[in-house]
Image 1 (cartoon, rainbow, N blue to C red):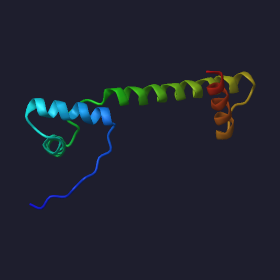
Image 2 (cartoon, helix red, strand yellow; image 1 turned 180 degrees about the vertical axis):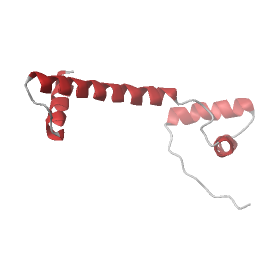
Image 3 (tube, rainbow, N blue to C red; image 1 turned 90 degrees about the vertical axis):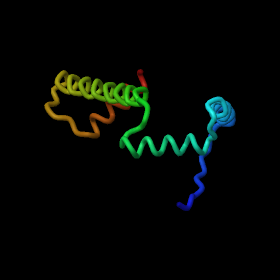
Length: 99
């Protein structure tokens, strides 16, 4: 099978540390990347958890939902039964400045 080159940009310190790791386990970076890619294709998922990313995304979503709840509560207090999207976005922007 004909191979192709893939370029990956890494922080210099990370690359050095990964080189050392690969040397310690008896492989090179090319072999490590091939193992990663084949494991991903075989299982159709990343071969490690990405919970940090998911937790950050969930935290952002929760803050957005809280801002929406605050906007809805504020609309009731000031007697507006339905707010426009522009009204909601303005309140969200204000809450971000306060937070």
